[in-house]
Image 1 (cartoon, rainbow, N blue to C red):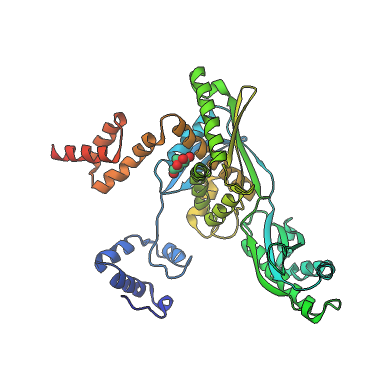
Image 2: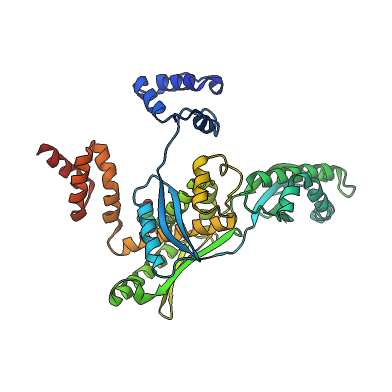
Length: 438
Ligand code: MEV
């Protein structure tokens, strides 16, 4: 077994690589070459990436694709997507084109509220705690003023600070439940700095609050942290068109609309299906979140909590037919930023935002929600018509051919062959082997 290492972070990048490849890989030389192939020849760009995280040994590339033709309200967008899964960008582009011909996507911002909490323990009289909270609340704001000044100048800041009694769920547990407006910033650093300042003031002021007993004065701050559950930082995206316009043939249209409604209804009631259904939505959402340098883990956590907000995990999209109009929509919480974080640091993120016409955070919420809705429409449409394997395997064909080591000429021949034939993994391998043996 390899021995634990002390001071790994102090080693140079080359030393780290030597240690990892000699201790954890079969062929150190090959492993080192792989890592170094992904280094950027632009030394400054490489240094920038090296410094994003700790212990960097190489770069991990994802393809950056473009899904064009997204008509959102009155703007036409080409959406950058960073994702490894074949067929996601193609599916988004197809859905964009489909709805471009049917009036495009309509979006509405339903809220922009971000949340943070100071979690604390207090054993004593709740009425006294409440009186103390009313006394200290203005001080919480004033002592955080150094942090909030700039945000306030731009129109954001602390919206509300509430005292919440959580003792029914956990003995002695209370919160300062705080809401914020962080404008174009995702706001994690702003919110966490405010919360830590609130916690300090709260603890300090409690120590000299005359109405408290000695025990009550000793408020125990457990932690201060933003919440990634943001049900009031919400955006709605929708598409609609007369049922008969859904396909070229009105009879097919009716059948297709019915199947779409059934598929959504199933995802509404059946959590196993809802998870996969929502995963398809996140294919679109995460790809744009990544391309624009936002935090996909935060978005994922918040979105899935929202999908379970009524006590059961359910579909994030909805569909209905009213007066012959098919409507399909999503409401989704998205706390995003278009300033701060990676947005100005990472050249590709910066470019992705430029391609999106330098959106505000609210505009980005709308674009991301549309990418999720489009992705879901494309996936469910395939599922209820041809099945997804047909399109998916066609897109996956190149990956299989690359794995098999096909030459460019062989790829061309086999891509043409599979335009007319079903591209299962076994069929691709067989066709490749036949071609090679000829
Ligand atoms: C695959 O990445 C996503 C789908 O499974 C989504 C869905 O089933 O709706 C196709």
